[in-house]
Image (cartoon, rainbow, N blue to C red; front, side):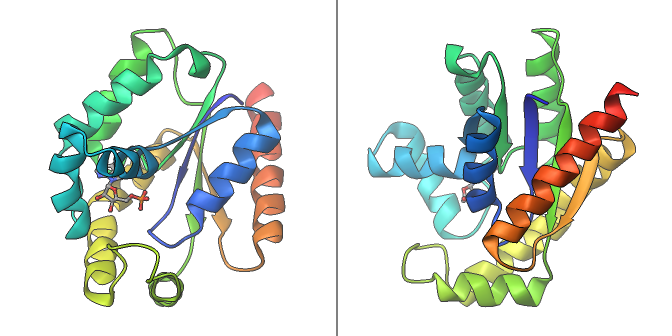
Length: 193
Ligand code: AMP
């Protein structure tokens, strides 16, 4: 289990779980949200372009996101594995990722979905609203709408491929990490049968 993806609505706790899982599994976390935020801070050309989309709660256009991920996945530190967090979010990104991996003869081993209700998500995001410029209620609701419009199809696609494992994202952080580790262990047992 070395090439993984964690997916879930904004505020599902996927960033936190991605950090913990990648540490447990000793694989590199790759968060597109973090890479975009770093580019915004460093005021790169990509950061300037990405920021206006991020501040409105919109997705950064696919071509920019795909190019950024292509460069990141070409770096040597991810050769032995990675945990993608927040990518792919659209079907076009799924296709781009398939191409990137296939060109090295690779594919994803498993996709973990953190499932949390919309209301729970809104409450959580409002609670951290001071930390991020894209966390006011209107923007949060828009990001959730986009999740349903664009990213649900990504979840369905991986379900059809038999890669999806869904974990209940509600509860104490440690419990959710335990649940995801257990779910992954079951997946790897199933895939070696
Ligand atoms: P996140 O930290 O994953 O919630 O991402 C924060 C913001 O970065 C999102 O609301 C988008 O504006 C942008 N972003 C992150 N990942 C992607 C992606 N895969 N495609 C497009 N935009 C993204």
